[in-house]
Length: 477
Length: 102
Image: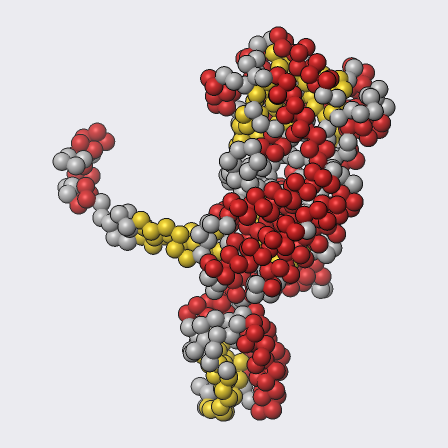
């Protein structure tokens, strides 16, 4: 019996292998020309692609998707353009180590519905910079805009004599084909940005994978924070693209002594504080209790639309919905990750209780991802950071824009945020071009001088312990 | 850019030897593709690609190899004298499973 899905995967991978082979010959200069051409072509279509993504998915705001496209192209390009990604990348004469960058091979890039054009352009740019062919696997609900972003990039690459098929994309999406590609013997890496199920499938495929764990970002407004500034920044972040960034704040934690002031500022900035009954209504609308996940229908919708869906008494110009909660866990569904302009709000007695509440949130589905603190007390910031399990601890920064890097801090601009072992990832880094290289090391002879002068027969004398051996090993050194 | 000779191969059979003399980038590969295929069709002999002077091959050159394979079959195309980096290209592309590359 002919396995159509496998055959399709084989054809795609044969093309990708050939592209990888041709790529292996390219010089740094040629590689950089291709990368620059792709950057410019993608950047020049930033507005059209943003509008296309918004029209197709119905999620977020096209204006904010333009900014995402800018970060994914201009900021990423600025960050990687001077990276040595071909040939010798370092040469340490003293240690005798020369490092050579080699491409890793064909990459399968899974694209989320929430960032369907920016993630495509970001992944293509870092793949081109590292001479790796890439296959774009769009989300079914964002097929047109993701494939259009890939097509624009590919045409630009070909104009600079890039290998044929260096960028491919799936024009139809099926789980069978996705799984066949992920498990294909010739695939080098799955670059998985998406829901937990898809990322788990990538890790289970047998192919090396870099994935992203789920987020559930607590933001602690510590007592020393500049409250109006903190509230303004959180609103900027949580309303950005209607909350679709996985690093967006999910819950605000404050001490009782400043809680009223914080809420007043939220109200002044057009946030709506829900009553107890309204929290229950919103839970039913925003959360799918059968799946135990946020309801996909409210992802990326505005606070106004969600307020109507849940029949809340919010004013017409509402920007953000705030749900005061007491608990973290299944009994409080809004304490989990919800990619929409909805924030949980917790009031606690003191600093320690605040940190403990942040741990609860951090461990309720978001370990390894991102946490945020507004504070002007360096000791408190460090204390908070040491306890949290997060790849990024953002300080006085809107977390949506802060976590992706390049705008509010010097983190590497990225649309794939590593979550370390907490998120079942291999790294907490913001993933970028350097993660798509095999670094080969020429190791020249540099004998260990101490070993040369050491009487190695002493290793066989069991009466000598570590301290005694070390004393002799390091003598006169 | 490409020279044709009929010589004897390892099996003492007559073979069409195509000796490529320049960098086989996209433009050059496309220029000579039809000429090579036509010659292969005319001679109807096993084919040897001599790549002694070729230090780069583009996707279009791999495409030419596939066109020739369609004409003569995988067993009747050999690649000889490939420089190491060019041999690596054929190996990475998986062509070594089908055709003889030296």
